[in-house]
Image 1 (tube, rainbow, N blue to C red):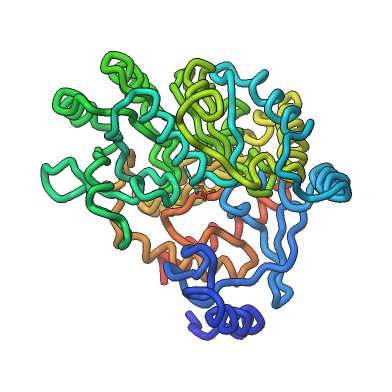
Image 2: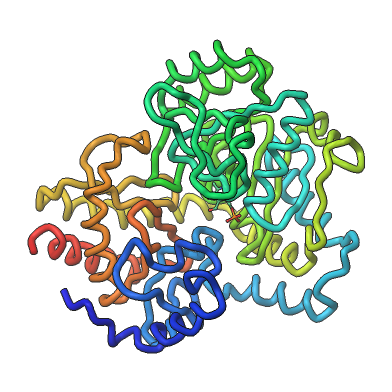
Length: 434
Ligand SMILES: Cc1ncc(COP(=O)(O)O)c(C=O)c1O
């Protein structure tokens, strides 16, 4: 495979320039393409299910800005909402009707939410949810799971320590050991580890989980496991936080909580909730949310929180996903796409599978049922690197890491999905046979 990238000449030049301004040339590390071949593509335009790079190549986009673009790029209603709102001013730092409108739409249509607070990113939502859990319970330790990502707040940049040690180690410099000591890291899909943790620790404020873990492959959990987690939290007076930054409004309007019919104590959102603009939110029962300032003593604030333009984009997006049959159609077309790919994989005996839930899919380079992060063989990620380069050259854009999932929008029509399935199939032939 050619390791020169003449087809990325403009992107290459822009990347070199960007390195002068930004560490690693990027404003979020995964964008640097460190886990795949070649320089990152600089994107200049998106329309429907396509994006166009600065070298004027068009790609079918499965990254979807890492999930928010469930209506594809430049949806006419979202665009119109943004333009008409911004023409009245971009930000006031004061309440607006648009915040009420989005808040009420979400709360009225989500059985587990009574109150919300808008913030500007998923990280902020999670960080605030954890402070709320600590303020509400008066306890300080939290439990997270290996293989779940919750943004870059200090106490969450922690992975499992070695051996039997349940206390984690930081995944980033700059996180004080005393912060790390407040976080316990457990494996997913392991009820014994969970019971042992509850038996040992009586100072737990919260357990946080991605109910559909989608940041380290797609590690689908058994519903029974999530139900057991719910019960153990209840029995031990520990709050359960569902981080639905990816799954919220993606696998259904009520996200994973609605899908599995499990009531978490606190929910966090991001991505789709802002229709492509920077919005996050956390919410819960009123009794819990009343602890947030100014009603309560858990401080939380934001200059651009509930920004009117972002509220308008979020509303335009959520109104559309609420239309009858939206999620069913999205899931059906994703299923058809995944089935096409699976037929090719099975016919050729490739040691892999496509994992799917709703409109999320993951190219899993193992035939085994993978539910935990440590079950992924890092060696197989090499296949993904080859495939990624092959597919970029064929006009298919996947997120630049084998641990990332793909997203399908309502603008991915059958023609685009058939084209993508055919190209991915050829790419897999190339990866496994060359
Ligand atoms: C489950 C989950 N939680 C939190 C975050 C952090 O969100 P943000 O990148 O908006 O800060 C992410 C980001 O991908 C996420 O996937």
